[in-house]
Length: 170
Image (cartoon, rainbow, N blue to C red; front, side, top):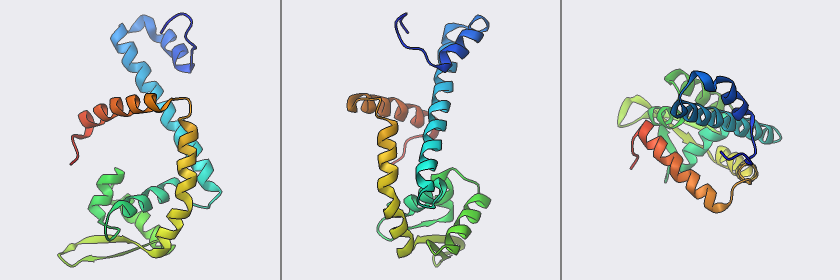
């Protein structure tokens, strides 16, 4: 950061702890603080936008996982657990709540009766489609401080980090 660079809250936090850490650690800490703060801002704003539609962010994310599961908009509970980074109990709870709204259905997997398949219903697809444009617009607004090229660079950098944490995905 140069002397003329604008400062954010994280810079102030780093100033306070700078004498206790070396420069490499300070850079890592600053990056983690910024990622957490950005994630918090994004989640808060998306939730605020979705409230107008009477849908919670987690509901839309689960519906989106199923919508991407082509061609039948169906995933096993295990796949939902992995994609949404949730526990078995959390997936069961969320699926039950969306099933009560008529947005998903669940059935035993005929190929493996120990497994449950969750399917997006027409009603669920309609509900998600109504809200996707609002979520996309909110995301666009949240990232408007970046040029398209900056977004591409940040995406590539974060992809590298995610691959190191989660491994490659086919």
